[in-house]
Amino acid sequence: MAPQQKGKQGTKGAKQIVEENAATLKFYRNMAFISQSVYMVVMILLPDTFTGLTITMSIMTILLHIVSLQFMKFMARAQYSESGALIDSGTDLNMEGGLSEHIKDLVILSSGTQLLALLSNYFWLLLLLVPVRAVWLLWGSVIKPWMEQKSEQTEVDEKKQKKMERKMRRMR
Image (tube, rainbow, N blue to C red):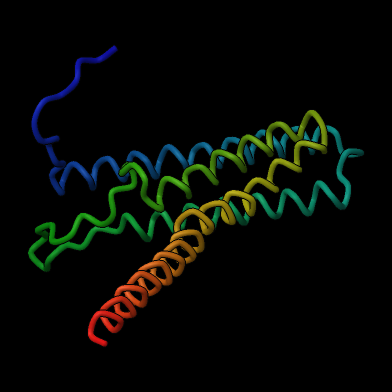
């Protein structure tokens, strides 16, 4: 177990963020490329396993990989001045709790699903975790807080109403 750090956690420099983002993009690009390559090689070696389902799901995972990697690339885009000085390092792809964490999870899930689908087509069902996770995140970060805020407001309004009624009774 690592000892607990005291004080403020150090921040990363802009140059370090750019370097780590490049390494992260390379890692996830390689993960997607390797899983796609292994899947395609095995499918080519076993041509009778190509069905409408496997072709459709292969296209879907390819699209998931392309969209995810392009979005991560867009997020990590650094901005440089005309003189070549770093102005903005882009979003830190390794930041905990950020959107990039969910995109990286999507690449991992789709790559793993694609490789597991070599064993059985039932593993394609793992991709159903994507919309389930999206609904879960939407519920936890948008819908539930909005509903709780509404109920708290009505509670406060009821308390204010009762307080006003008591004041009115005293004044009579």
